[in-house]
Length: 253
Length: 253
DNA sequence: TTACAATTGTGTACTTAATACACTATGAAA
DNA sequence: TTTCATAGTGTATTAAGTACACAATTGTAA
Image (cartoon, rainbow over all chains, first blue to last red; front, side, top):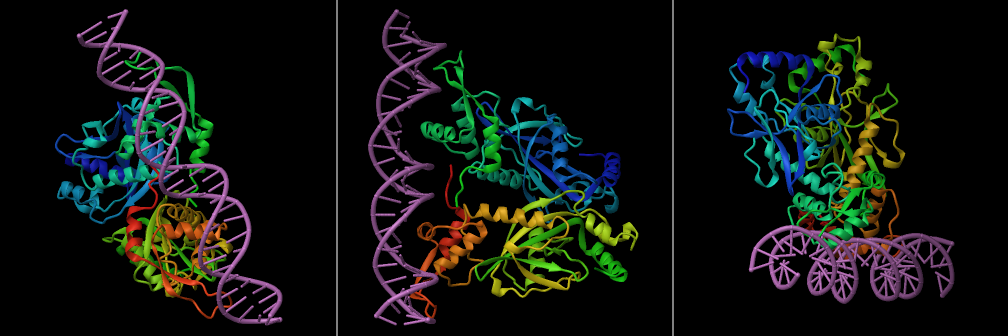
């Protein structure tokens, strides 16, 4: 939470630089040790967590705003981002209103107004991310998707909606390049799909289907040193992957 | 185009009532005589057409804003609406800037600022619509999807994006209830799918597939009086239709 | 060193969905 | 009554999805 002085400074600065009434919220998905993770922030004085977010500069494309915001939180400079929905309930910013009400007159307080938030989800490589807290938070950290904490505002609704969008995307686009390391095994990729979908898949059928997409290359050398039978290593065939991204998988109609 | 006096009044009013920097653009699809149609507006002094749109009241949910805007243009009060994407290029409102620049000082001119537009598409029954021009237009009319005129701003991009979203929806949700009359023949419904998709489908396979969804009821009586063999009439089974809307069709994964 | 547990790799039969394609039926108009 | 346009229906083939079982490898514990 900001002090009065900080709020004054932040508000002045924001009014000068950002488009009013618009915010951006990002759901950053990462994958590590067989677990789907989401990047969250937390202040010390509040129990609840919130999604990385921010505002749009006056002359900035909204997509670039999302990239900029995530660069600040993750240190990454190439980020796979997808706009998925707008959250425009007039009451959704009540939290900030309550928190900072009285500290400053309404006209001077950036947070007093209504914000319509554009939701983006991002898929990132867990190991490439260095979480950086923002000005309001002391903590920026990964949380397991199946052990999410209580969230501020409507952020629970937002990340659930992002997950729905991601699940839908799984049906007509390849996924994984942005979430997996360069080389990975088939069971690891399967685990990614399973955590996104929240259900188990059959190993044999998964392998046939994913190979059928033609977006994987199998390396000659299996991964050694594991405790069990050495699995093959795969990597994405970027040409086919990119092609599948634009073309989509199954026609449907 | 507004006169200076009108611009002054409009700007004052808008500033008082609407959320700044946010607009809504709607792509209204209708279906008539085997043609997919889009509802468009045009001023007399401009050659280019534009999409029905408007702004969000200060305490209004964005979805309700879209409904309100479309009620004004179509007279309908139940409208199937779907948010599909946000258009946030900082240059996208240049048109209005140019048009009204100099008429009023920037701070007083509602249209001088940047607008981030939320795109909705609507599916409506052609016969239920009574097109009403808005304050800026003299004409509100249906245009054939395959004979669209030149559009203002980025509105061509917007309706194309809406069509993409609609095509995608075809793959996992039923479509037609909002576009077809209560009773219709199988060839008519097929024509709807064909115009949305922009390609021909096989009659026999179409029928099998659509019946397989279990959302149609066939009436006993065929339609009489046509010039050829009397076709059966179908209507949507609303219980199954609603169910399919929420459940979706094919799992994919 | 050998048996065991955990994990990986692979194949086959069955069912369901998608595609391709052709004939019969009806009703109006010539 | 013949012809033309349109509607209704079925079947064979191919592709995709699902269900399921056994053999191979590697480290660990007996």
